Length: 105
Image (tube, rainbow, N blue to C red; front, side, top):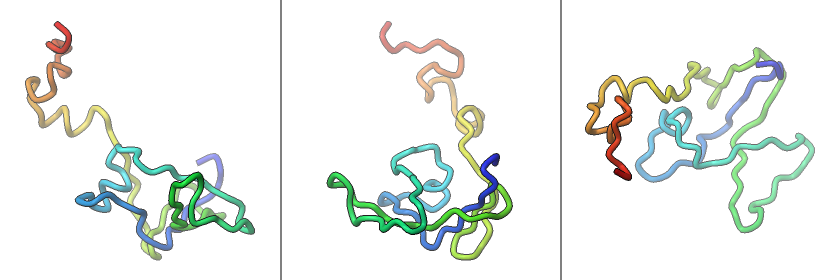
């Protein structure tokens, strides 16, 4: 938020088969790298054999605001200790909920 910029996404970000938009934007999996380039710089189709996709731009605006195709998105993020721990049993989490993991014992 200290940057003083907002993000305008002009298309949906790339996603793996089976992933929905909510999972892509805030599902906790960092499978795509996001980076910024100056507005006057041409982005190549690929870099070191990895395809690149321009999905939007940063602009002056309300810090932290993100718009997708002109529609403002609700702030979201991944809570590592939220819904999974609240709805999963200790056995489903391999003992991580109580600290009694049997992995390696």
